[in-house]
Amino acid sequence: LEAVCKKAGADGAVFNFLKVLIENKRIKKLTRVVDLFEVMFRAEKGHVLCKVTSAEPLSSSQMAEVKKAMEKRAEKGSTLIMEYTTNPAILGGLVVKMGEAVFDNS
Image (tube, rainbow, N blue to C red; front, side):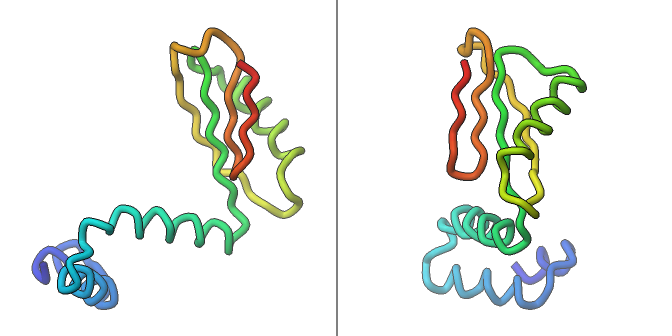
């Protein structure tokens, strides 16, 4: 583990944290820990994840239009982190998840 952390250039605190997870048989929870940290970090910095799902890929102008519309709904001072995916099961429209809110316009 130490060799891998050194090669990756990981901070000593990361190495110690991973050791604690291993020693306490919690290494399987690492993915969840990272996800929760990311949520807390974004909340602290005012970043809001905005996942947009459409039936077909959106054009650049459509992406910009969606982002502009979602910025109007977002809290003042927050920064949107946009993620665009496609799902052919959606016949048309969009499904947008911004923070805990879901806007289903499919």
